[in-house]
Image (cartoon, rainbow, N blue to C red; front, side):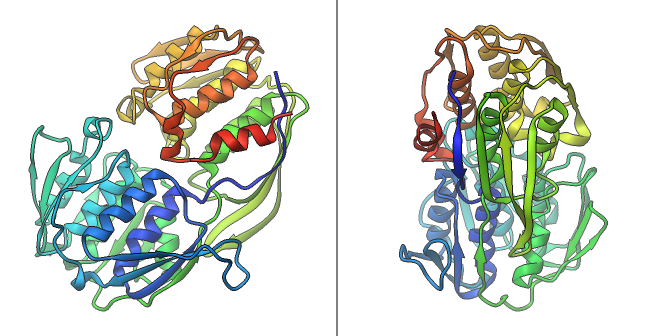
Length: 432
């Protein structure tokens, strides 16, 4: 069992990066984005945007004293977007395919969107059905409710939506459509979601109104917004794996720098603290409308318990696999409820979490929408970890191997590049 020590700035926030790329289409001119996530998911967004007329140029040299070079995004404006000549391939990225659906729903041409085998198993009706009610013509090209599908956009009507599920992706897609619709579009969510879209709208000058934490509304964007410059903070979802490792491994100490602390994304911090982790938040500040901070995590024994259910899931559903690992290494209990959505992520993450941790010697009980982990204070290991081509399961497995008594072999760690291409290198650099 090793310890982790050092300073780490994980890649740029993936959710913010997707929005910066796609929202640049609302401008006419050249936007600059610094610190963009290198994840394959974000590459999927740029590749799709290129096919509808947005141009990109990478500048690797430092610029104006910023921490790294910029990606220049040259947009023709909404009215300048053109019909793609071929299928828009979103790869493994649910954010890409859902947000682009909202953007393209307002354009007067046909677009066809598809993804890899994993994305083809992820349901799309909760975004496509409301877009259809606004006037977009949706047709599924193979299987009802799943990619590939086609959107024929234009002539949208503003609509009021009261979403049954709290989804920042669906909310954002409908707002992007609403910016191209007649009348007002109102999107209500049952619980607060990560508010990256509202924060970025405010920062880059997109008009909108908000009531509390659960309702945002927009009207047609009559003129392109001014080209913007934006810095992307570090991604807390990527940092979560190292946070769990540092919290669980005695002798570890990692300082995470420039980390995004959006209030809709802090589940990993909440739950680790409830488990008894040593976490110190320092130097809180703001970057381009987003709260950020440096965070110090120090190793120790976790002996607290936590409950994660519906009202908390939206603030960290992607971190559930690695939090389950933290619980297995603790001397407490973690119960997860209302998380059936994890069955339709890149893999059936509920089953994957339970099967992998059980194989490694953990004590888990699975339910239809969650599980219970009863920590033993250690993880025996000596097993094979099935990543199922799911980047978050693969990263969880690599951390499990680091913290287990006997080695755990991950069947495929190459898929970590979907969100964190340098994950393995950073893990080696910090290991002592």
